[in-house]
Length: 137
Ligand code: THU
Image 1 (cartoon, protein in one colour):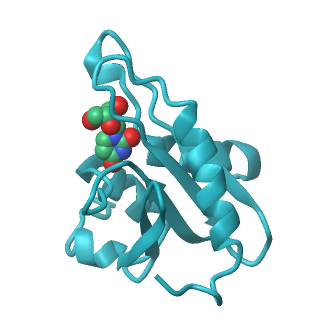
Image 2 (cartoon, rainbow, N blue to C red):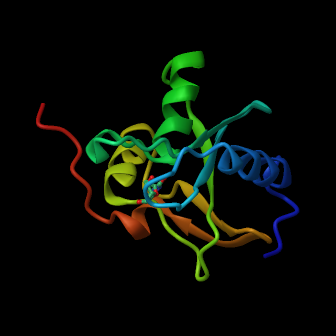
C-alpha cells in the first residue's frame, strides 16, 4: 500500500510489530499488535493482547493501545489506528474493540490493517461498525 503522506505510519508499523512480540497469548497463540496515533502531535501508543487463564479477562491489543494513550494523556483526539497480525487477508478489530474505538473517534476514523510484511489496507471505522451504539443519555 502507498502511504507516504500518512505521518509516522512506518514508525507505527514497527512499533506495533514490537508490541506484538510482547503479546501474552499462551492460550490462543494468536499475537496482535496495535498502535494509536494522537492527532496533531508525533505521539504513538502501542498495545498487545494480554490473555488470562480466565479467558474473559483477556484484553485485545487495540484496547490496550487506546487505554494506554488515555491513561497518559486523557481523552485526546486520535488520528489513526494500526493493527498487525500474521493473518492474510488482514484481521480487523473485534466488535468490542470497534465499540471502544467508536467511543473516542468518528465514523471516518482510519484503521490501517497490516500483516507481518507491512500495511496492506486502510478501512474506516464506519465501514466496520456502521451503526454502533452511542449513548443512552
Ligand atoms: N485479539 C486482539 O488482540 N484483537 C482483536 O481485534 C481480535 C482478537 C486477541 C484476543 C485474544 O488474545 C486473541 O486475539 C484471540 O482471540
